[in-house]
Image 1 (cartoon, rainbow, N blue to C red):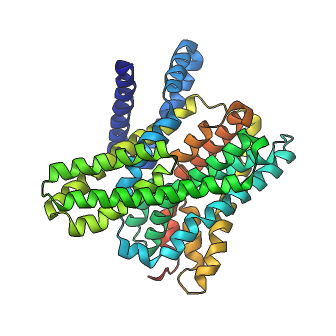
Image 2: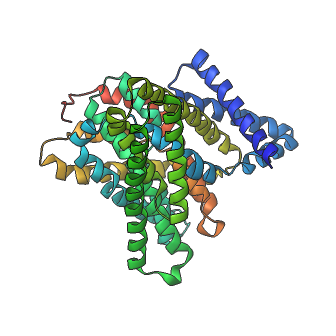
Image 3: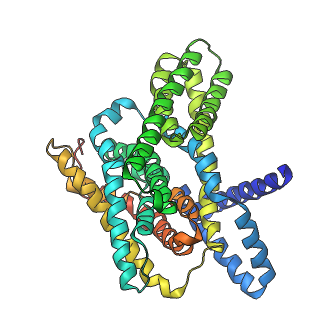
Length: 416
């Protein structure tokens, strides 16, 4: 079992390293976009070869299926990536846009879930694919979380105002956790409709979110206390590693949100911890350690997303539906940002151009695919997975490559 796991891990890391080299040496796209593009091209080439030599395609499909993408991302990789992002967020800058971050990562997620779910419900009727409304809401929930990995480097290179960058980063860190909770709540209702009681769903949501936040504060302060009493960068780096893994372990067994827990803990360690409990040397080592963890895991993640193409069915009759769903996802994203923005605009801290940047810069990523893989065949897993993959691929390859140019257009005041 251990040898088999090492074999899978070795193949993923070797592929990630080689494709990262190819992108950096020849293609020169932003890391996440380049890795997904090269892995997609590799998958297409392998599928083409597999058509000529079917046993190869069968072996490749078997291998990709052996990688439990959903559990690998949601239960292992996500905690590390969210913590790595959170420790680099400055609370003082986050406080300036806190109203936007809170509304975009909560109200926008709920609005987007219902807009996409309702829109897809109507579309499927028009395409003669009638589907229960609850199943459509599941798709709305899984397509709502945004992924800051690919877009942040592009926005920085484009010289985007710090507050716009902070809105995207802050929203993405928090809406990942909220979206997962919304998805799991709807999934529980879909799998057990006879036990549908919205009070139970609300209690489950409150337990996941509230419990995750409390656990994050407890873990963050515990880590802060331990670091304050020592000055050894090796031990303190190890403490941050233990903090992430321990928080996720406790969250899993206590049925609270692990993503929210590590984000809160990361914010505490990255701000109060660096300022009051670490030497400059320790803070530097911790920053570099988590930057490397983030780079490695994201490389593996985008290679995995590309390789998933091998096992996803793409009936030609569904491509028209997929294109319409991509447009629907963008329109729903815009409306879900525009509505809460009207509340913020009363205080004059957001512009129409900022809403466009937030809409186009809200890239979908691995979390959406992982959640789609959690669906059962009875819930229409194959169709939702295909639609999710099309939205994610368009999001990263098209939106990711053009959001920098969009961000440069128009005036974006510092308060935007």
